[in-house]
Image 1 (tube, rainbow, N blue to C red):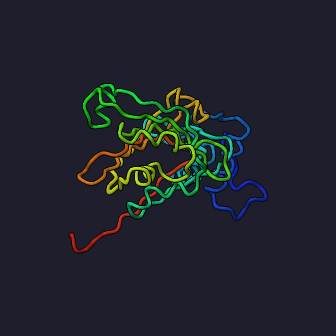
Image 2 (spheres, helix red, strand yellow):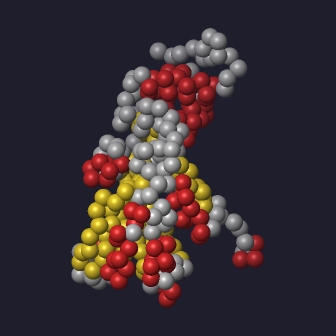
Length: 254
């Protein structure tokens, strides 16, 4: 059954804002519970009597507030009942990679121990299986919000394992401990981004349902001579975090 737009008393508001507001109210009322899919694009257009453009703008409004996520071939999934605080990590230069920590509390360490890495970890760490590394599991929360925003596995070569006891006492990036304790300076960072489904272990740490979408960021930190100093595998809640990057064009390089 289609709805009348604009509703009485709401004339003057944009049509996509009205659709977004109606969907928000339905999500809040559990007509579309967290973890379920909204109706298809065609169904929403028919339901509200609006164009695809209007419907897509309404979904974008909800997505920008961390309430839904959209995947091709899957649909639009409800992530939260209310618009939530959302940390947007903007990047203009390599130094900005580390700036998110200024908005966070000290990390909560879930476990730290040295281990001889297996074949899968060796591929990640670009070393031979059996080499000894320190692995730290941790979560971070941001100022003004107690909800964990990321779950991270941190790998450090055995030579720098002494940082284990310092990590929970420092608010800054972990790489800074390599600099202050061992004089190792990070000169380059390689990043890989991928969309994943949050597994059960990470879901418990992030306080979400297993299977929810998340953003996985793998970072390799290099020192002089391209020596690998640190590897982090961080899983971010997609409803609490987004990543924005600005690239500047250099006309002299074509």
